[in-house]
Image (cartoon, rainbow, N blue to C red; front, top):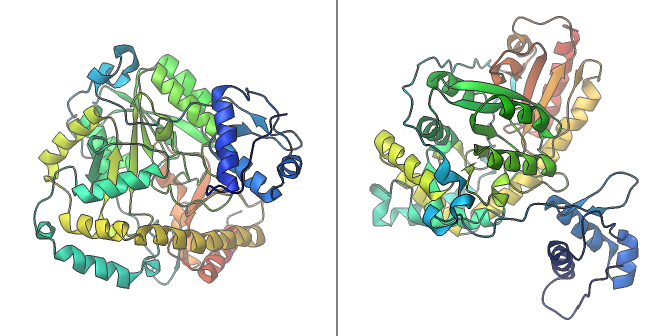
Length: 488
């Protein structure tokens, strides 16, 4: 049996020593695929350490994709893709056979076809479980004001900044992305006016009307009018409890030359589900094989509440085909309109050229203040605060759902994080306007129809807990239960 060596006199923690040794043995091939790891209790006794430490190490290795386990069976070693430990280089710095991006044809942006409809009615006097916006009362306003005053003293505060974004903020974002095992250099990042601006740049710059793009079904509602606006060919792939249906995606690749795949692997909007490690790896391998770009939307990457959540697909991207989107909008403040793209330098150059044409640069003031806020450590503290608060709110929501909505009336998957719960309504009677019906009962939610490119035959609603307190969440779900009883 493999037995690590633990030296308690070292400055590195027992957890870190054990984790690093097991990872090294797996990566070197000493512990091969299928190897049954010793039970946590047995290993803890042999090493003379706390069993909870071994359990946490196993959980971390599972999250990193090194282990797999099933109920009633051993925890076993699994073969996984290695993490990309350095930025993807320019085409001339890598072998031609290894550089997928250099082989991709980057067409000129298509002429937009205006057909977007963006109106969402809001009923007054209702509990709001509709909007996907963070609770701004959780922001440390005193700290943010201090950062604002410090930023104002800089001469750059009132002027234009680099079209790729405020350089010091780019550095802070790259440092933060390292925490998610996304290792990128400055030439890999572009700051945008939120994620919507990022999507516009990507689709206008990299997709033409003759191209086929794959999206999840359901998907981010504001992507739909953008796709309709651009007029490209769209193929939908259903989302199940493990994320995008990869088996169906394989069949699609046999029939179509797919230009780009858009997905939200962690805390998917609107379903809240998280893509499994196996599906992340298969998706990446499939797109590498077919030379297809992946747009990975990490809009809620930070909000992990229950157990361990897998690393972004971008963390395994050796070929430079993954375009990662991040944002401060859902974790901090949407009014700052500050997001970012991390991608291959050739893609960043092309997106930067289009951004220069469209808006010259993003807002210098908001970027300068966010830089100070991140540099001070306040942003990391804010994330921890958000996780504590919303872990409680999500628990309250799931408890209220079990209490007030019988399973014969609706079903849902319990999310590992984020702000969303997706309800499938079990009813043969399709209400003409479910949103209005629920508003009449004193609660605002999102009608599931808004999240489908092709209308669904089923009835869904999306609940967002991002802007409501625990008592409001419970009362709102109670009202949903009463409203659903009238259409069952």
